[in-house]
Length: 276
Image 1 (tube, rainbow, N blue to C red):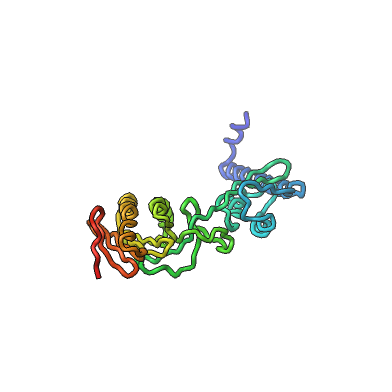
Image 2: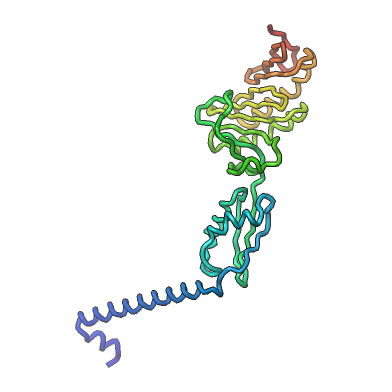
């Protein structure tokens, strides 16, 4: 009689007990194996011996990385969770992205990408008017249009523009600022602040202090409107020999401007009319 036949001949309760015993033995072996692996990977021989950092490190010194990231790293060379390790380095100020790789023997290679500050950010509450400058604490916008927190005192370029708009619009606003900047530069100006209201109306403040109401519309519409204004406003300011204080481009057939001591309505291609 073979083993299978002998097992089948056993009473049902005996067969059940044998099956349960086999499962218990298998579970005990699995637990023992897991404990053995944990014990092995935790041996001092597998302790990390060095962390090699490369990539963008201009904003963070070795001391800064050690103070901010190392306390968050757990485990040995074999047991460390690389996803948790990446999160530890990405929690360091100015670090946008981190990639971790185990390198034998017992080294951890960390490649960092830092944020490149492109603008200051002021989040505007939904429904707030762009004519009222935000009073919220400033953050930063990187070159990808992502908002991030960092010590503003670490920003070398203090002439970064300010973007103020509803939450989650920083990317669109940075793209609009970049699209409007060439026309402003043609005037010898720069846009040092760009506001977006909750209703989608754009407002720019030039470096000389003039405020330009750009109105609503797609990016192409707003850029084209501002371009027309930039191409003709110099004729208006030259005619009255007076600097620009404010402009409103929300008129259908032209724009209204306010010069120092003078108010005009200008339609591109037509003479300016003085309004007192």
